[in-house]
Length: 154
Image (tube, rainbow, N blue to C red; front, side, top):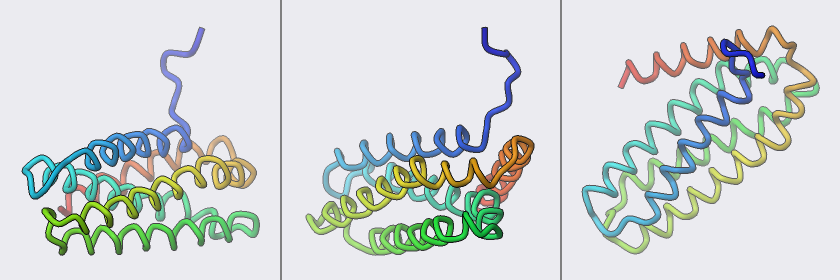
C-alpha cells in the first residue's frame, strides 16, 4: 500500500508540468483562426511554459550545471528553452488568423515536445546520478517557490 503522505520527487513534479503543457498544446493545435479559444489557450500555454522554464532553470538545472555529468544536458535544455521562448514571442506577434500562425505553432509544439521527451528520458537519468534523495524534496520546494514568484510577477 503506498504511503499517503509521500512527497513528490522533482521528476514527478516536472512531469506533472509537462503533462499540463502537452494537454494545452494538443488543445491549441485544434483551434481555428483568431478565436477567443485560441487566444485563451495560447495565453495559458505561454504562461505555463515560461513559468515552468524559469523555475526549472533555477531549481533543477542549476545543480546539474554545477556538476560535470549534468553540465552538457542541462546546458542543452536551457538552450532549448530559449528556442521555445523565441517561438512563443514570434507567435505572440503574428496574426493568429493566418495559416502561418498555426504552422509556427506546430513547430513550437514539436520543439517543446522533443525537449520534454529528451528531458524525461535522458536528463532525468543523468540527474538521478547527480542528485541525492534529499535533493529531490528540496528541489520540489525550490521549483514551487520559483513558480509562485513568476506567477506573482505577471
